[in-house]
Image (cartoon, rainbow, N blue to C red; front, side, top):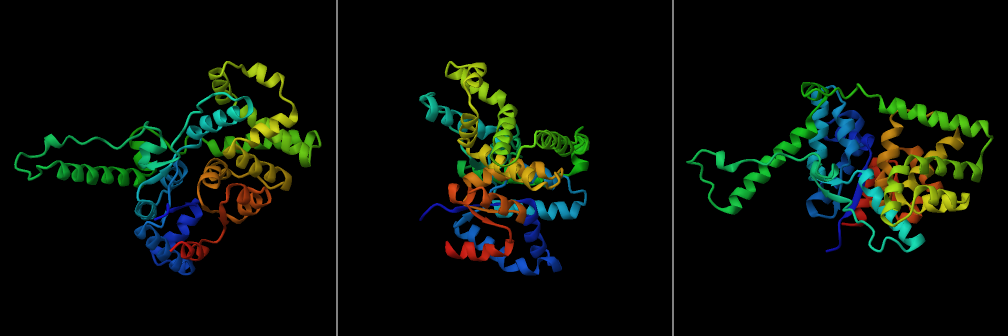
Amino acid sequence: MSEPIKVYLDQAKWIDLLFAATGHSRGERYVDALAAVRAAVASGLATFPLDMFRYQETAKRGNDKSRVDLADLMFDISQKQTMAHPRQILPMEIDEALHRQFGRPGFPRQVKVFGVGIEHITAGKVAPPTFDLSALPSNTRITTEAQKAELQRILQDFAERALARSGPADARRVGFDPFAADFGGDYVAHENKIADSLRGYGLAGDRLDIMVRASDLGGIQTAVTEALTRIGMTWEGFIASASESFVRSFMDDLPTRHVTNVMRAAKFKSGQKWEPNDLNDILGLPVGAVYCDVVVTEKQWVHHLRLGGIEKRHRTELLSDTAKLVDVLGRVS
């Protein structure tokens, strides 16, 4: 049997499936898609991995029932399949780009993009608790290693589901306010500042593309510097010899950053207003577009990614209509 296809759904598309699952009138046209998704998961033909941003956006839903229903749907369909955070993937992509350019490092760092649970997403920083089975009552009839492993799995599944269901009130109880830090607002301010600079210099077309990539290179300076140090180079030396064409080719040789900058450049060129929720799209969609087989997201991003050649470059099918999953999954059944 071939590998299951990997399908990335953005938040709005998960909500389409939730509407179908809960009998909402807005979900009528997605009922068949939900059935196809569940069948594909059950048969092992497809997986629907979650990323950090699905957890974050779901956790911000203040309505407990709505949040729990969505979290349960995501949990059941994803089967705890998850994607590494883009921050964990970037060092691998930088090493591989440096290897192609300079022949070093000889063995680029490798990262497992797909894994299981929140522990994989956070590279071990967050993990479900390890349960002390010896604390069970002495008359508990769990004696074999297989029974112990199954109980451990059930308890860890319970912990993972509880984490996925957690909301703003849960976060505040442990001393964290999910709305205290305005990351989306900060991101909008950052991109608007760059947009002002681009307009001020009258940049458009290819010149704008180069400057977008140059600004992004500055944004990942720490990660690039760390990778350069590993091969005996310095940031200063790297930049001193970097022409505009080199900056563009190097940044485009980092797969997820290339997608990021296609998205950013498209927004700048179109003059579209930056919104706080663009941050999670800019962070999450590139990993899906590069490493998944199918991405279902909003129409504007499908349009921009297709124009940027992402669909052909990474052989990723891009959809904006959740209902079209019926056709996609039908082809692999």
